[in-house]
Length: 154
Image 1 (spheres, rainbow, N blue to C red):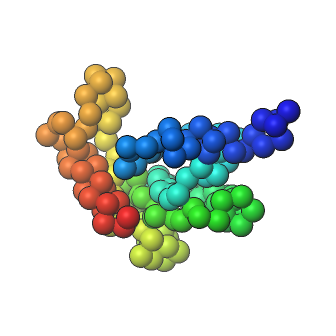
Image 2 (cartoon, rainbow, N blue to C red):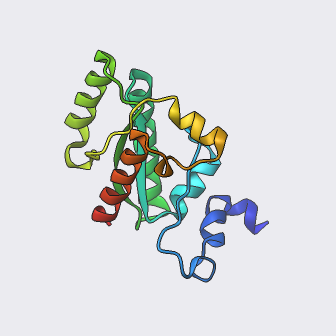
C-alpha cells in the first residue's frame, strides 16, 4: 500500500545514499514522455539536464517539461536544480538555427555551449556497442566537451 501511495518516490528510495555510495554521478536517462518514470527521475534527481532536439515540436514539448519540473521542485523535490538545456540533433538547416536562437533567448546562460550534432553515427555506435567517445567521430568529441561542461557546472 505504501508503494501505491508514494509511487513517485520509488526511484529516490532505490537511489539512497547506501546504494550509490562511491559514485560521483548517477545518470538517469528518460524517454521523452511526461509519465510516472520521469516524475520518479525528477523526484530522485539533484540536477536536471534537458536535451532538446532543435526542431519546432521539440521546443513545444520543452514548455510542458519545464512546467512539470517546476511542479516537482515546488511539491516534492525542492533540492533539484536545472543544470542546463542541451541542444541536440543540431544541423545546418534554418529550422535548427531558428530553434537555437529561440533556446538562447529563453534560457540564456542555462543553454549549454556544447551542441550535439545530428548524425547517423550515434545509431551506428549504439548498434556496434562502441561508445562514441572511443571513436574518431566528431560526436565523440562533442560528448567529451559536454562532460567537461557538466563538470564545470557542478
